[in-house]
Image (tube, rainbow, N blue to C red; front, side, top):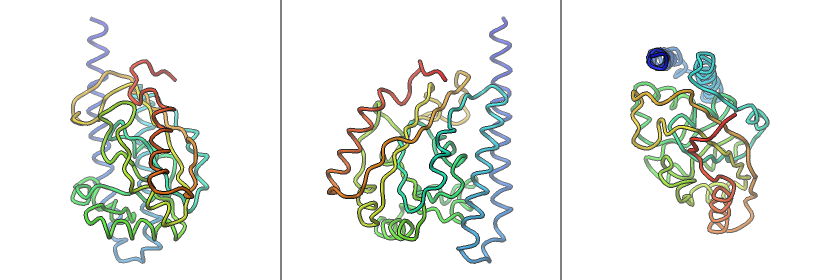
Amino acid sequence: MWYRCVRMGQILLFYLMLCWLGSMLLLGNLAVLPLLLTPRALREPLVQRAISLICRCFLAGAEASGLMQLDLRALDRLGGCRRTVLIANHPSMIDAFLIFSRLPHVVCLMKASISSNLFLGAGAYLAGFISNRHPELMFRAAIHAVRDGKVLMIFPEGTRTTRQPVNEMGEAVALIAKRAQAPLQTILISTNSPYLSKGWKIWRPPEFPLIYRAIPGEQFEASASRDEMTQSIQDYYQRTLERSIDPQLHL
């Protein structure tokens, strides 16, 4: 009986948190629309900062409510990065929120479908995020962004993890880093829950608390060939992460 009451309270909080997040994203999109009239050099850092604040606020609320336990502080070490390609494994859809919450100035390589998303599209465009709709344009924009000193974030698995600990890594990250002559900085993400993993609907409540850990990993220089770099990254993640979704994970 006690467990059922606690569970019902957690589920109610869960839905309230999702509504709160949706409201923040919608209002944020509306608030930044006037920045369309400003130069990109001005608006992109401002919108990136706004996205970071929304993510940080949501995660802080989820942690304060007891729905989440987070270990993200080590990401603060990357706050001074410039001209870097960040790569992270991708166990769940919330991974980008974890990184944005601690790194306020990041350009993200995103799926084309996000551009038309009511909650994410306008903010992503105004923040200078790069769509993969047209691969050739994507590569040029990504390389230019890194050469210009920006921090580019990519999930090299291409989709959320379906094979533990990681899917097969794509070669795009190695190609971008090599052409931009920038280091590849890995981020290792682990969680105790399959919530928002591939096929999990956002409205389906998981078991609580959700635990997320994200830490900086090894850095790879863009000196080897594209194939060698891709294989090195693949080997590193498989060697370092026994499981990215581990029910036994504790903080």
